[in-house]
Image (cartoon, rainbow, N blue to C red; front, side, top):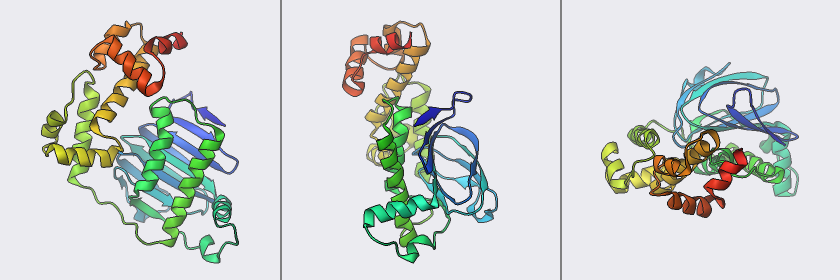
Length: 284
C-alpha cells in the first residue's frame, strides 16, 4: 500500500489503484506526471522555493508558502521543483475524479463536471492545506502508518476539494507577504536550537511584531500554535536521537528542551502514547 524510497529517503509513496500520493521532504525533485492524470501539489506551511513545468510558461518559477498548484490532465509532463519545506503531491487518473463525483452525487455527472478544468498557479486554500498537513503528519511526526482506507479517504477529499475549484471562481493567487518572511525566520530560529524556551515574547521580538500578531500568523502558516509546534519538533528530534545515537536518555531530554527525563517521558506518554525507553528498545 505504501513504501518509503530508501534510496534517497526523500519521499513516502502511497500507491492506490488509480492515484499516487507522495509526501515529499524539503529539497529538489523532478516529477513525471502520466498522461490523462490530474496533478495537485500542495506546499505546507513554511515551504517556499522554485517551480517549473514543461510547457507552462505562465505558471511562473517562484512558489509561495502554503499554496498549491493544480494541473488538469493532458499529455505527459515533467515538473521540476525545489522547496524549503515539506509538500504533498497527488497524481490521479481523470476518471477517478468522475468516480468520486458520482459517489458523492449518487447520480449522473453533468458534462460541465468533465470539462473546464484550468491550471491553478500558487493559490491558497485552507482546506487543501489542512488535509495535506494531516497526511504529511504521519511521516513528519512519525505517527503509526495510516491504513489503506485512511489514505484513500484523504486522497478522495483532496480530489473533491479541487472539483470545488473547477466550479467556483473564489480562488485567488497568493501574493508574497511580509508575514511569510518573518514566520520563516521564526521557524528557522526554533529549529536551530530546540533546547531554548522559545517563549512567545522572545519569538515576537525576532519577528518584529506583537505577540498577538505572531500567534495569529504562526497558526495560519503552520496549523499549530507556537507551544504545540515547538513540542512536536522536540519530540521528533528526540525520537531521531533515541534511534540513531548512543546518548543517554537524560542528555537527549536536555538537548531537546525538556526540563528533565521525567518531563520528556510525560510528554511522550501524553502525545505519542509511548515512552523514550520503548522507542530506544524498538530501534535496537
